[in-house]
Length: 396
Image 1: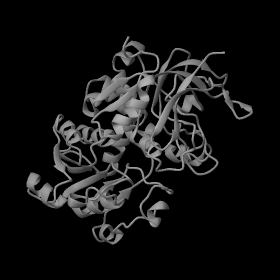
Image 2: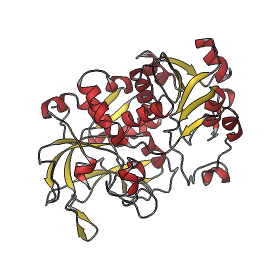
Image 3: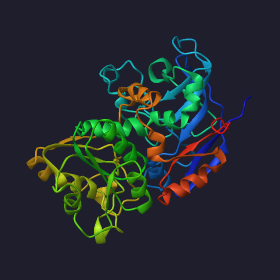
């Protein structure tokens, strides 16, 4: 029997590389004839993984992590018609059946048939259907013909893998945040957060033609990374208001649109930066977005946060100034990014050298054994996107 190893969550602040079961084409007691087994080529550490590792969710001990997966098909079920063994493919982090009402409407982030607890599923994530994660050597992907994006040329794919691996989540997620905020040619945009999703969103805004992209964060290294590809930045540790900092850049205290790439672990601004205030970003972006503007919210907000500092936040109830958003006629877009809505077009943008997304997010390749150290460095604010290379395929 072939062996397999994966990165498992073992409790707050602790992840371990462990031996895990080799995947089978099975769903419980049933054969999974529509699935494939992937030899993982690249799998990435995501900020939403960090929410679990910090103990800020109800993730169970032993959960195998990883929802950003790119791999080579080594086995295919008998119902897989349009993919072949040897294909290099990107797996959207959303697991979707392709058959329910939502999937047929393109809302693959809230598929109705892949999670008995709620709409929507993902690999290796709490409350998202119990699917085994892909921070591993091998993983099973169901509904393969529907879910997987095949790269057209194997050699080109491997040469551009540092970019293409980002198609499973953060590039489409950042792009979705920009699109849902209404970014277009000439837009002035504020992006909250300079983690990997925020940087991917900022690069996406540029791809969409934004005139000025302003990125806010509290970590100087991450702000420097945003400036490295042409963004303006604001340091949210400063006591100046966000609107004053934006006005110092553009001459106007408001922006056309804004994107929240932080989520529920947001902190206060200025002198309050050391304290957690989960509604801070949402309230700030409403303040600085012009009347009639739109706000994209790819940042994660949860229904249960056992580590929250107040009882309301523990059930996802935040102090949002919805009256301000209503008064300014803002449009909000929340929820998981439907990756398949964007991944093929973004793949082409990479293949035709229209964007260097790996450079924008500072991709850093590590081994599977180095994953625990990568989690620790990422948690301390490293301005890097850690890509795990389980089979040393990227260093070959």
